Image (cartoon, rainbow, N blue to C red; front, side, top):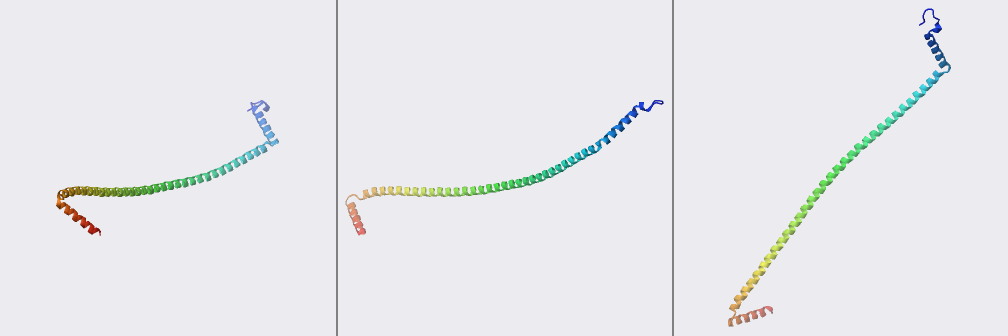
Length: 168
């Protein structure tokens, strides 16, 4: 504010106002407002382009995400199917192994029973052979005692005659 009696050109406010008018006039004369507007428009267009590109990238990322989620679900389903199949295969293999073991045990049991029968038959045969040998030995001893002298000679002649008659 000017003090009473002082000329207006000595007031700093006057000079600030003049400077402002000169500056605005210079800006208008140099058409800087148009250049500033063009720069802001260019910047706005660049930002819009970046926003559109970001939207496109976001859409692509969402698409990829949904594809990977779908693939993950499919992979999990396939893994579950593989586990189920492996469990089924293991169950079948266990059943087959049980059946094989059962057949093996039956075969070995039959073989053991057959060996036992054969051993029994061999033992019976051996006992009979020993019994026959004992009987022959006993009969030989008894006959040797009974066939001494003339009665034994007559008995041997009669036995030879019987053998000749039976052979012819």
